[in-house]
Amino acid sequence: MRKIVQLSLALSCLFLFSSQAVAGPGYISNSGEKFVNGIANVTTGVIELPKNIILTTQNDGIAHGVTVGIVTGVMHTVARTIIGALDVVTFMVPTQPSIRPNYVWEDFSTETSY
Image (cartoon, rainbow, N blue to C red; front, side, top):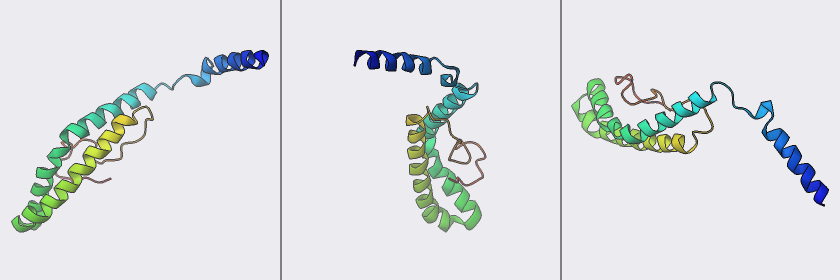
């Protein structure tokens, strides 16, 4: 039993220090970008509310801006904040951003898509 434990420990060390265990060259920057993106979306998600009110008012008029714009803004605020929090929690898995535009202030005249 002792030999099996020693052998498995030796193999684990070999796998841990092998060249395949090293992260790729873009891994750190992609993970960092996802983390910063998540923090920014959590803290600035509330800007989705006035953004959607303005966009809806410009496209459909003041009545829609006050009613539909507020509802749409609240939905986008909650969605951006939750997705940002998920990005912060899962930043070690570098994936493509799931929100377009990446930040709420980028391309302010475009509605947010997921």
